[in-house]
Length: 181
Image (cartoon, rainbow, N blue to C red; front, side, top):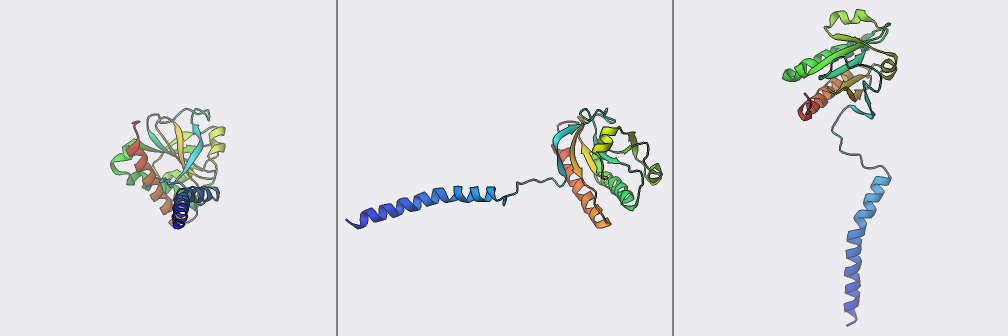
């Protein structure tokens, strides 16, 4: 009779540990930032939500996906590489390239001589958008004019190629899931 209560307490203890241990472990993992969510995008999501309207700019290509790049005042080798990757990424979209418009934003002091080797559409920018698009980053804009993903400036040909592949992967996902045409 003496062994019956001990085995009941032991079973109850194991049952409590089985239910409490996962909660405690989950709390530790989350509080120590050991878990990183399952994001499948390669670009950085623009948060808080920003759009052409919030920046005081009219959408230069409404109802089209856009790849934005602000042309700097001096276009060095990294800038030229960026323009090349932008063109190649657009070409690599294949049949979806008709839905995406690469757009080079130019300010009054932009180096327009860099665009001679490329055939891009250009659009003027205002000060608020110019300040927001610093550091030669690429931006994906949806057809409603919301700035969605950003790709910061990288150095080197290999880094540009990797970023171009990431840009294509993100664009293909966005185009596939888009309900706005």
